[in-house]
Amino acid sequence: MKFHFWGTRGSIPAPSTTETPTHAFGGDTTCVSVLWGQNNLLVVDGGSGLRQAGMVWNREGRKNFTFLFTHAHWDHIQGVPFFLPGFRDDVTIDIYSPRLPGAHAGNLMERALHAQQSEPFFPAGFPQLRAKISFHEIQPGHDLILRQGSDSLQIQSVAVPHPGGCLAYRMDESAGGKKSSLVFATDNEPPESSDNPLTQLAHQVDLLICDGQYSEEEYPSRRGWGHGTPELCLKEAISAKVRRLLLTHFDPTHSDTTLFQMEEKIRRAVRPPSLNVAFARQGQTLEL
Ligand SMILES: [Zn+2]
Ligand SMILES: [Zn+2]
Image (tube, rainbow, N blue to C red):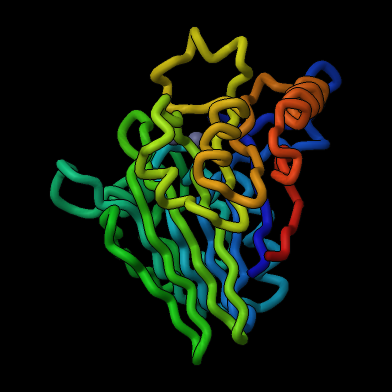
């Protein structure tokens, strides 16, 4: 399985400036992709990083896309109107998104994508996309299994603490006799208890990707906003006995300098040292 970060930023894109350089860790909002089995693509979230990704996949001539959304907050869907393959009539897109307990009737993601891509916010409405688009819902606790020949990608989910709700996903790949696993837990404020649904979901995965938006100093004034700190994520990673931890969803006010300092601080806090901890970089690919 190959995992790629097209966007690592939370809340709003943060282009690099002289005052707040962000080019080392990236300025685009959340979009990641997973290549599994024989070149099968899964796109997770569609923040502003999706624009660049769409250009690359369009050049490669990809025609089939499977999207998996964690939730409908703007920084996770704002790249969709700029997704070039969406405007092609030879493209097929399947969109999976959460159906959370107590949600209103109808597909929330379908409604959100139509709303953001309509007048007066955007000139080309969602119905003008020429790709064949299908919407599907995922309920926490219900597995989704994608298959291609004898290869498979099993996707499990749990609801995580975040205003309005959000799902964390575990992906287990079985391909060519090899197995690998990861958990993508963006937009998540880890609870104090180490025995929570996310800890169980992430048990012994190869890689945990976790929301490290705030510094330890910032967190007390942002408690309840639905985001974590590197320290809270590290606790989660140790409880879940994962092999590797990557922090993402960086605050738009955090410059490269701040993020380098936060990364250094959390690396020094790691016990046992066998746990590999780092901050994600936009453009980074990991092979599991
Ligand atoms: Zn977010
Ligand atoms: Zn959010």
